[in-house]
Amino acid sequence: MRASYLIPALLALTLLLPASGHAESADQAPRFIATYFLTNVRCPSCLAIERLTEKTIKAEFADQLAAGLLQWRTINIDGPGNFHFVKDYNLYTKSVILTENVNGKEVRWKNLPKVWELLGNEEKFRKYLKDEMTAFMAGL
Image (cartoon, rainbow, N blue to C red; front, side, top):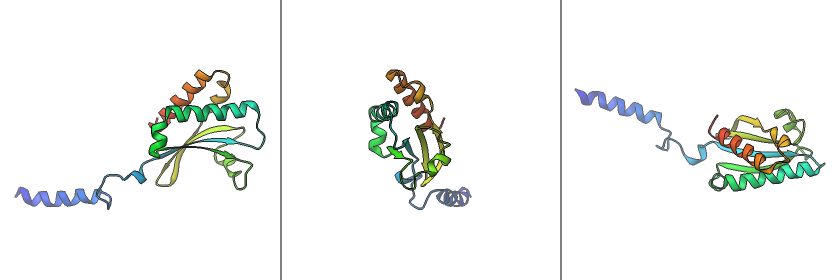
């Protein structure tokens, strides 16, 4: 009598798995992107934010970059077709934006405005960026 309940239960469990039979494949894993949005006009502070952000990401998140879980990029909003980012992320100045994409769709984003406040202190800047990115990638 127990066997008659076991077969329907096993069938129900197989319906919960994707067609591949695995709970989740690597291409379905969330992908995080750290983007520095800039313009054609570049001041020393803007260049420093870009440099420190790139340096921190490459040092602190090398494994995530290598695994394809994290991408670092810059986007010039003055470039062709890029102005929509101003509206998409409420940009009013050069900014570092973190995004999470699931199955090819952006599901959330966060602006890191304190990069401007902490620009004069590299240690605090790097700690802020590392802490914010770690929390964001943990879903906090």
